[in-house]
Length: 87
Image (cartoon, rainbow, N blue to C red; front, side, top):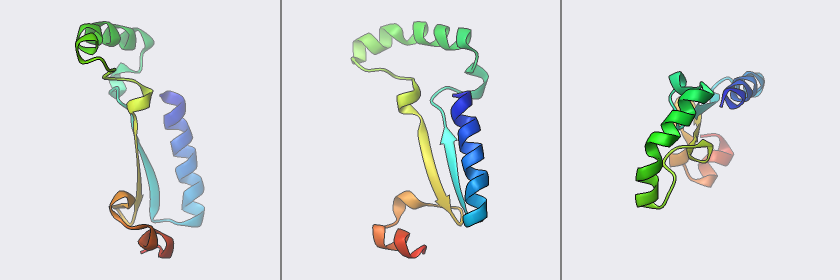
């Protein structure tokens, strides 16, 4: 998670050279105070019984979110045509 945060910050610095209004926001499934491997282990242990019942994992890097914003607007809500012309 720390490497992903570092990578996204580097990527955002590169994006600023091309488009100052574009940014990528990384939202990990774990909160920032849980970046300690010991805390992550205990979190997984606490969730184990719930995950067995639900038959799915509730936290992990596969559940991290990436939001691409342009002009403080989420690109998720625009059509491919609007994205191509740069709205």
